[in-house]
Image (cartoon, rainbow, N blue to C red; front, side, top):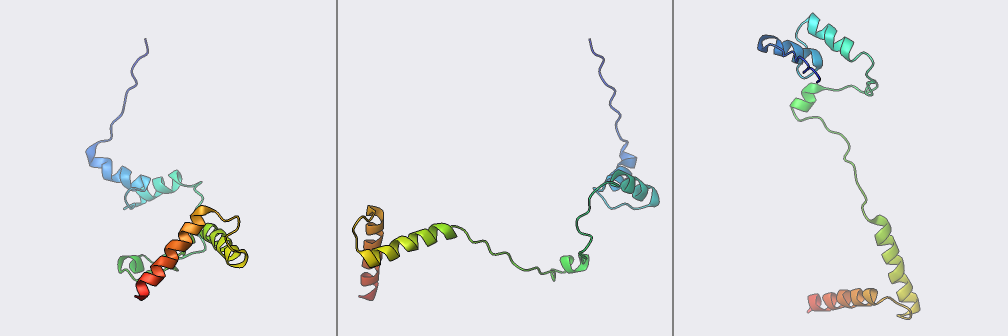
Length: 114
């Protein structure tokens, strides 16, 4: 039968010190900073070229360029091509859902004008 492992608990009085050493809190003295540096010495820090202004973040003056996501762009382009083909060739070999869509669009336009 296996012996249960002895679990060592951290005392409440030194919990803040260990949280500061592991990075969950800011290190507050040299010992915590040394532990933190030793723990993360092989960490690949990817923001070396950038500077971070914490006051700008706190004061909500930090701005970055918004990202624009184009969703379903290919689907819309394909659908538009299908409708262009209808305009040139008529409704020969045209899918029924496209005919229905064209009728809905046409009926919406005429009801709004009245």
